[in-house]
Length: 165
Length: 113
Image 1 (cartoon, each protein chain N blue to C red):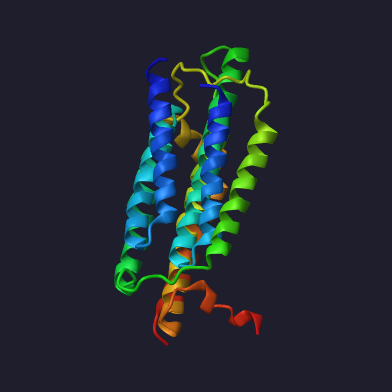
Image 2 (image 1 turned 180 degrees about the vertical axis):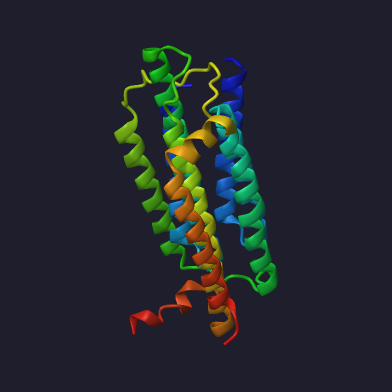
């Protein structure tokens, strides 16, 4: 067992554990904080997969911007004060059973997948910003520009929805 | 690492997100579970892009192949769309809270009537 495998198992355990904590905490603030830990461990997976640029973007965009937005909304609404009314116990049980069955079916369907496409442990540099930037500004320049228009419309939409009428 | 492990990890994360959506009633936590599912898919895309790159490097020689950048570009665009989606969705939740003083999704079934 080399360093990569040890890191993989550690990060996987951390990811699954913190994701489980996210959906079991009563207080939404704790859920947000554990979700940040989940995203950071997923960024660790990206670094193990030689996707360094995506790891950095994941930390900045998800763990930084989006989660701060969630925290702002939760704290502005003062949601941590009132306890969330719980669903019926049987409905929760049925939800867990349904999700577990989904996981079981997908894993059973994919467990004999041909594993000869073994992810090489050797480093590759396709995840560096130099190579990704070349592809982004030559081959994917049109979707890049369209996504800026998408951001503009999302910003206008958020302002229009959020303002008092 | 075989790619199976990454597939299993992504499936488990996705199903944790599904369980969260099914069992919680707080609209914000449901939204966070959707983000968790998006990240599971992103992880799977990055793992497949690495595997694709590894196979291409075996076939075409280690130097010079840029196979696998497409998958990482897709992940990048998924993150862009997710950021836009979160801003609009949280604005909708804030407006909903302002009107009903609750983020409980069971109170929000007026579209049924």
